[in-house]
Image (cartoon, rainbow, N blue to C red; front, side, top):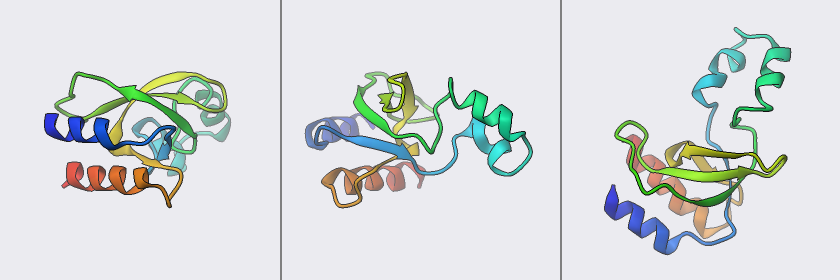
Length: 111
């Protein structure tokens, strides 16, 4: 994991904009219809959503045993900052070098 972190630090191009690959754990009950839409919209104001666009700010130096590499991001819409697992994110520009780099990491990490 440390080696992959060094590789990504060296090769990830900036600026890099990210979005969620699929719903984040807190969103699951809303995505699958178990929570109210109004509650979901309210929570999305303070929680990161897989539908948001984030600007990549940098890597956390600590590696999570459960989540792997963590990244600092800023939501484009309101500039709110979060720390998220990199494996849950993908580059918004599918034609960019970053898209393949991040996709390769996510596949590697999950498997």
